[in-house]
Amino acid sequence: MNPDNRAMLGRRGETLAADFLQRRGHAIIQRNYRTQYGEIDIISKDGDTLVFVEVKTRRSQRYGGAAAAVTAKKQRRITLAALAFMAEQPAETAARFDVLCIDFDADGRMRFSLIENAFEAAS
Image (cartoon, rainbow, N blue to C red; front, side, top):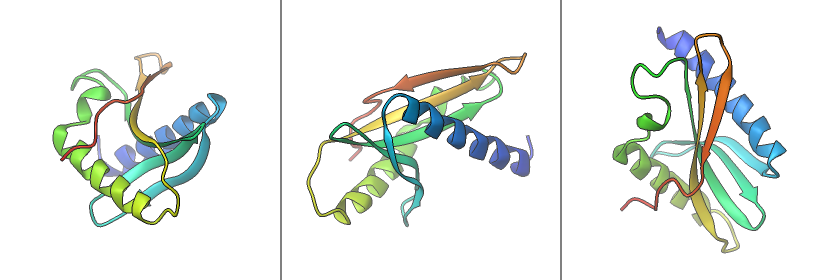
């Protein structure tokens, strides 16, 4: 897949993910939060919990599906970006890291898989 198609699929996935999370009661705080460490796709509130959501969208299971793409290195980058975000916030709050996978089958149907508490803060 060329980079333009990959970026377009990623943006579409993030929009679908934000809608999915809102339907589940999340309040979207920010999308595409960028730091020197990397980007967090979606930051939301689920009740009193701050949620850092990594969105992975895949058109096939060829490389293990969406969840397989959240490596230890990626987790570390998300953790560092989350710490930067939290340093900007005045109040302490509980936080967690979720991964939202959107997999498309051959017929174009979507399957959402939300993995709550997908990983602990990477050190």
